[in-house]
Image (cartoon, rainbow, N blue to C red; front, side):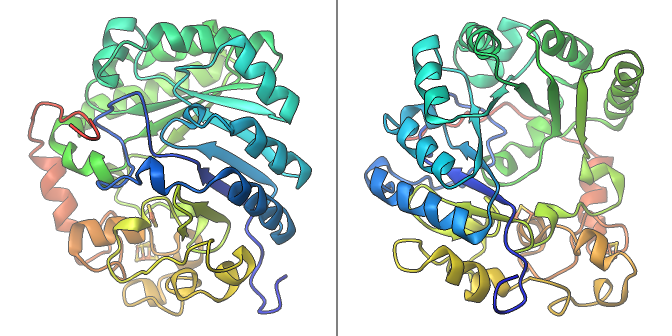
Length: 358
Ligand code: SF4
Ligand code: FES
């Protein structure tokens, strides 16, 4: 326990860069990305990994953007390893060859999570906005050849849900041990593409049935991230605000979740100015929605409040303009009609690809 009785964070999301070779319409990174010139340098990341280890972090997702675009990635991984932190690389696979992976493994990398957009090259490349499927296939091969655990991360939406069976089969063929099937969360750039991405209820039901059938016949671990727009229940976002997880943005801002950039009054502290220990325990940003004291009705007296923590602050803000309101995904929320209207009359639109600088 910290001196203030706040449990230490378990997980770190280290967003080492926002730069990315892909252009996915479902990107949940903020509309305004951090410029490369504003990124933390190697020495700063090395210091922060040591601080994170001292604070109690045991697991780090090294993510982005595309973390392989950082030439000093192995040094960052090595610093995490020295701090006793298990590292997982979250990557598009573009740029991951045997030499690069070998250097990361030597530095202490423990596992790789590879993003895949769909089951075939044509469909996957269409969603990614560029050719990249072949890079992913090669990346999966080198990860398995190195003996590292491989996970796939597939963001699901209207354009790939019906191909879910093929996506899971691909994961099995590529030797993945686990597939995270993440129904799109509508934040950041993805919110701009909501009309193009929001699936129909029937397609979701069929996809859930597909997952159920695979679970019966295959040892592959399938994680189904609930499509909260359709479930009428709020997700326990981030395992609770300031409860389990800490995010460091490419420019050193420290956030309770990777989408909280958008919350206007949050003023995220920066790891260039404060220690992670102070930020975690004392900063107004991390205490803003910690626990249950901040809640209003109906969450304040709801028996679920310690289970789902009132849902997602970023979704409440995105849909109502007020991050302290009950997440509109919850059917008890006075704003639930905002979600119901969207799912009852799904619109359609073309993808708006993410092309920074374009
Ligand atoms: Fe969760 Fe609040 Fe809904 Fe209760 S009212 S189920 S605490 S989001
Ligand atoms: Fe920020 Fe849910 S995404 S609290």
